[in-house]
Length: 241
Ligand SMILES: NC(=O)c1ccc[n+]([C@@H]2O[C@H](COP(=O)([O-])OP(=O)(O)OC[C@H]3O[C@@H](n4cnc5c(N)ncnc54)[C@H](OP(=O)(O)O)[C@@H]3O)[C@@H](O)[C@H]2O)c1
Image 1 (tube, rainbow, N blue to C red):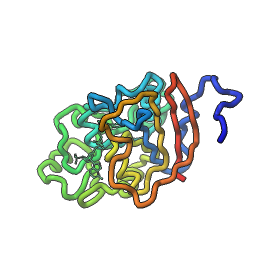
Image 2 (cartoon, rainbow, N blue to C red):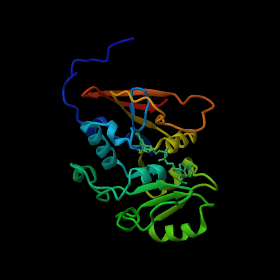
Image 3 (cartoon, rainbow, N blue to C red):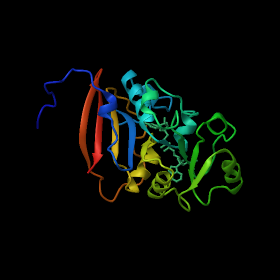
């Protein structure tokens, strides 16, 4: 065992550098937050209440760095996702790309407000990652309002989804959960990196942890890449082993 402190402990970190995507390959990162006791959302069912200003900055930065932001329909519904808003410092980050990344919402049911801003105002258009047996009537309307990608028969296969996003030129991917979606991403073997904010709070109760799905046959090993700290929050960066 060893201490993590080093000579430059305490100095301000260049987050753009600290969270740079590896060059020259497609890379799928997830950005999640958890309390010390493993809760992925707080009382009102949202994860926002768990974070601090630095976590919100990181959330914005990981969006700004990404070519596409992937989110499960559950999160889009609960958190009321709309089109991505540009964040501070994005002009430099997004040079040569669209001003904001598109959102790619994962859904089988397509039970989403297709008349809402996420589908009527987003520029670039929202992407829907869905399945062949999605409700036919909703699929027709979805095709009108979004860029629809069918990536599986009954469930989105994230290896296929990732390939299809890559074909569109999206190589820097960030998944914002939620826990059901992220569990499937990991089960499909395509998660390269987990950015986990450990919030110094205890919550108890029945909130999900950051992955919530079928138990994996073997634990997916992750290698610690970076630890940052702010106000007792830990910002952990892990790469797939
Ligand atoms: N702690 C964190 O960092 C964090 C991050 C994000 C969200 N959250 C919290 O997590 C909660 C929502 O999470 P959740 O796990 O319930 O929902 P979720 O993962 O956001 O969304 C689940 C939904 O996504 C669709 N989906 C996921 N995988 C699919 C697949 N392989 N094929 C087809 N559709 C698929 C389905 O949508 P349909 O039902 O439309 O078919 C499914 O019901 C919210 O409370 C949110 O605040 C926490």
